[in-house]
Image 1 (cartoon, rainbow, N blue to C red):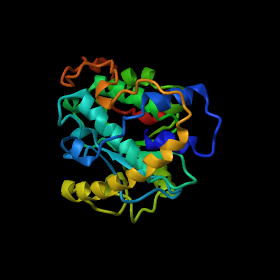
Image 2: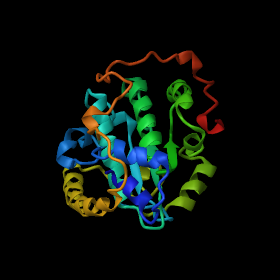
Image 3: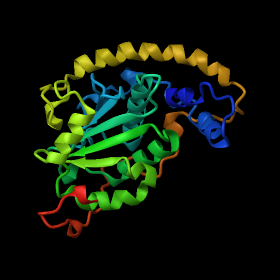
Image 4: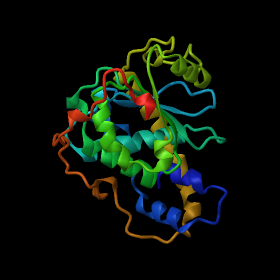
Length: 267
């Protein structure tokens, strides 16, 4: 059972039918460790930072320019689930949602996959409802705009309203980040003062240690044994709409790009 759903159910004996369905459908999605997703993690495309925001929420850093280092949607979604589970594990008791910091520096069309975006949105909204508190889209370039126009219909209203666009040198963005973070701890890529280079070896060791924490959650999951059982799929068998080959890129209509004087903060 994913940790996120176990956390949701604690202290709430009355489960809604929706929650019961999610609990049974995702029972074995998180039963893997860092060694199972090491190839996906190698580029630092997504990782949990070593700092939280001022509200204590865990932070996932995402760098789309490093995204398509592997070829299967299944593997990329598996890594996404791993990161979501780890971030949830590290949430303080008074917080239910996390923050995403998305660094668009260096993004090119070769890093963009509508199929991956579609499946990520599906998993986030179906299996992790309410887990995302805020996503800061930092320095999104002009080429991202037509892609975002295609992704927007995939997002429900609650998810869409959690997206905030920000830009280096923008006064409102600077204030937003200062309100959210200790600037001495925030990475310089997001306007902070902390210069850091992602070290995959150090991150792997850190995650392997944190994987050990997960074992303690499985015994707690037994308290939910009254939930009706179904044939629980593994992550490898979960149905994805996209083909397994992420290199099949949908054509992006670049005529949708706005004038150079505009940016996505207006959306």
